[in-house]
Image (cartoon, rainbow, N blue to C red; front, top):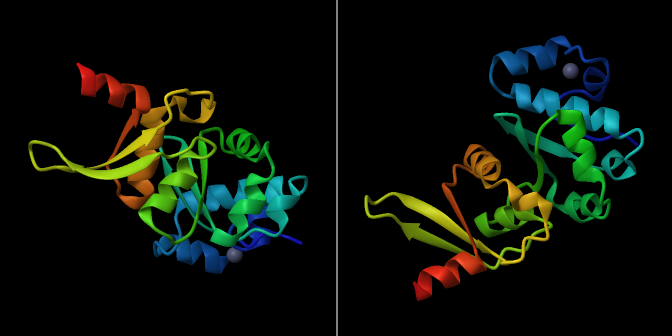
Length: 178
Ligand SMILES: [Zn+2]
């Protein structure tokens, strides 16, 4: 079994795009992030069995952070491997977020924050009228994953155009009682 990728599996393995993939890249049908993520997934699939059956739909990159969009039905299996994110991050040399393709904004955000829980998602308007999406996460940050809000915000903006605000339960409580 080998993963389905935005480029040919063979290209991903050799690192050299065939004429067809090269022209799709030139036309903007696929991006350099798709190519880089495909290479990482293809190589990792040798030992990360969950990736062998997975379909990578597309990838987004910003400042070295990647959002990898897989077929939504692949996500539970990918999550069952606790080392998967670390493996992807080592291969991509940056943060990696695994999300399911399609689905609601809330589902997307839950995927990005995983394994942290998303408590609430609200749309807020700043005084200047700017629209933001506010996510409240649990106060206890046992999860190393959400330690880097800036990277996560940039990745979310890139992948879905969402302007994200992140608050912890504790910050929300503090602002209520201050
Ligand atoms: Zn190709």
